[in-house]
Length: 239
Length: 257
Image (cartoon, rainbow over all chains, first blue to last red; front, top):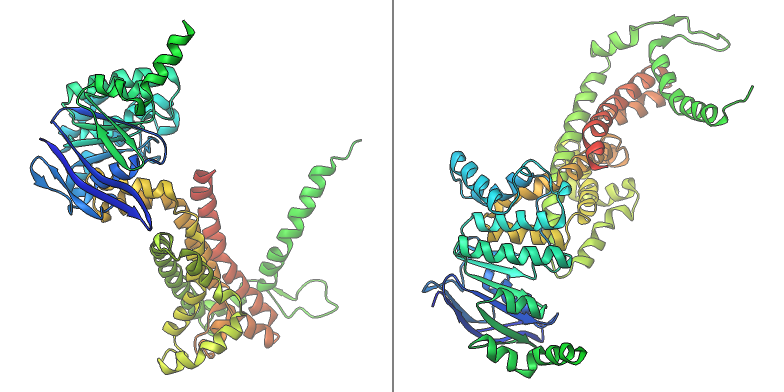
């Protein structure tokens, strides 16, 4: 397995936020995780990304134990719900940011960023500052910035949460296209049922700090805890 | 004919604000101006020539003040920025922030009197280093409180993001935090420079007359009833802040708005 998370526990004071987290993920796959606010999704992602230290447990990435590795050495990028574009840099420089940190030659940076701008359907927007871009464009630049560094794992924390329905749908399609093009392994956290089903190759459901990963989508749909049955009953009742 | 009261009042206000400064320049050019003479008997650059000839040590005081204020502004801005970050992430940040107000509870003169024993013991009494340290004690908490508004959850997210993109602490500072805080850093530098530049109470006690900053010199001239030199030193006192204010307005405030 590419990613193996074993018995991760994290508490803040008396409160146990993540309880015995266990799951694994194949390379180039997306595990979407559904969960309500406050169920421990963000803490789980931040623990895997190294931004929050776990109390116990182990994280293996490509067979290597990264539990104690600093976030900057993990090659795991964490994407927030907010695009967090650097306000002092234009779209091009925002995408090039991670590449510049790695001191990649200028010619290669230009080539990669221009290709990324094309993949993100952002041709002609390179010189625009973040304030001159729309919400969807900003989120795309944010994606580009994360993907351009070729991360081993991408952690997405409700990345489309702040977008309107139409933009959200377009971003979901773009994300699917990009994950296939750049062969990305990712954990996609959302509280949107439909988005969880659409985005993941595998689906998990997190409740009160416990993550349950389903064998297939059918199991997920049939589990009454996930709320899918309620949704089906609701829409079915309207017909 | 209609009188435009708005522009009239505005012009009057501008005139009232500018008058003391214009009068100071005028006074610095005058000498032997006695009552009831309407115009001074001499008006020229005699005072300025004397000063630049270093007869009274005013030029020396100007450079001493400049050195002290620049040191205080650089140290307090840099340490204020860095330490305010540590305070923001500290679990007892509220208590630490409250402590930063402590130097402002007392008047600077009383505060200096309280500290004088320690300065004497450390050999910092009556020298420039001592004055810089004393003024730093006042300017640093200001910088700390000033920068406390900069640190927030979003800035923390930026830091985390840079880390996951592979950036180390140095890169986080140079490529993100400092560019983000650039405007605030310049304003803080300006403010701490002014705190130091116009400081009198602490400087007079810790400097014990041996460190004669421009502010100390102004008071000496006024005590001696040498109004012309007093006005001249006031001009020198005002000149650097005016230059800083101009640069702040032109390059900083415009970008912040």
